[in-house]
Structure formats: structure tokens, C-alpha cells
Length: 266
Image (cartoon, one colour):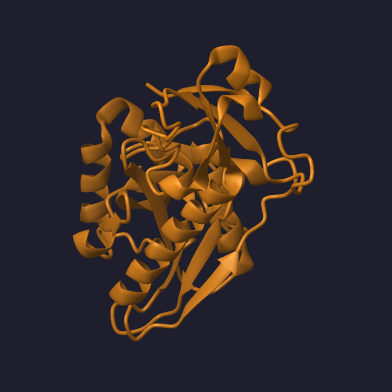
């Protein structure tokens, strides 16, 4: 069984400050060969762990076990691979559409929550006459046993506002308020100025269907769920009547999800 002892920044002081090192302790055989290692990420290669003899580090001498070094660079590379796989899936689904990749920096205090965050901006085209905004990076930050989420929002125009909202969703989801199907989150202000919608409801991506929802990735599977702008009154109705009852009202009213000025259905 591999035991992660602690983070230790003193092992290789010459490396860049942003590359941390984890000490991984495991048993070794008589030839001092690494026999087992647990991957810290399902995408991170075993080659990212380099074996050392016990005498190469004080903890190794003390424990009499092999010490391995695991660098954050490998984990970072794995996150990039996952984000690129989401992008490839989106491009394949939206063939014939223009897809813009916006690398989003959440800032120094939030960057580590969703490293490698990208927002994919998809123009209108053969599949849809609306714009689509899709996160790429949530799965890599939050996956568990290979399963995780990304999010899609549809809108009537291309606007930085919607890119910022997707980054807000990503930070909210990965920063302690883990979202899932039928969950909601407050925006804190109108979706766009003058809109009655000030919450987002996580739903199945009915507008695009299961071919976009189910996104196989190296090392796992992501579900791309819809972040649907809704009103506070609709959220309150859902709390009392349930998600399906609210969706039925949406169907009966024939709402246009991309219309920021639609009337509340309750």
C-alpha cells in the first residue's frame, strides 16, 4: 500500500517554485526496484514517479523503504490532456461551427481551484442557431473514480459576460459547492442587465441531447450538463414542487432558454 507522507519542497530546491513534490513511500525488493505505485491522478503516468534508494532521503533512511518523487507537473499535464479531450469532443459534436478556446485565469487566489480552466465558445451553425459556452477543466479538478462534470450554457449572442459566468460556475462547483443534476446556484445579479433570471439550474442538456452530454475521456467519463438561467420564483417553486414539475411548466410555457427577458413561468 502506498502512503503519501507529506509535501516536501526541500527535496529538489533548484526546481521552479510552482513545481511541488510529494513524497511517496512504498516497499522495495532486494534489487531496490519500485514494485508498486498508486497514481495520484487517473491520467498521470507512472513514469512521473522516479525511484530513489533509501539513503537518498532522510525519510527513506528512517523508514527503510523506497522513496519516490511525484511532481505536480505530471498532474498538470494530465489536466491539460483532459481539457483537450473535452475540447476535441465538443469540436466533433459541433462540426461546422466555429469553436473558440478561451483560457481563463481565475486570479492568484482562485487559480489552484480550477487549474487549466478553459471556456469553449461555440458559434451558431448546423446544430444550433444559438451560442454555446462550455467549460473544460471541471472534470480534471473534481473527478472521482473517473466520473465528473462539465457545464454548457446557451445564449443569444457572444459576450464576455457569458464566459465570465462559465468561470463562475466552474469556481462554484470546484470551490466547495459541488453541483450535480437538479442542483442550482445563485448568480447574485441578473443573468444580463434587465433579466429576471438570477439563478442557474443544472439540467440535462435537452437543447443538444445525449451525444453532447456523454463525453468519454482518457481515464474516465464526463457529463456535460446544462446551466439554465432561471428566476428566483422558479427556484422557490422547485423547492416545493420538485424539479420535474418545474420542467413541465417550462414545456407548457414553451420558454426560449436563450431569451434573457423571458417571463417567469410562476
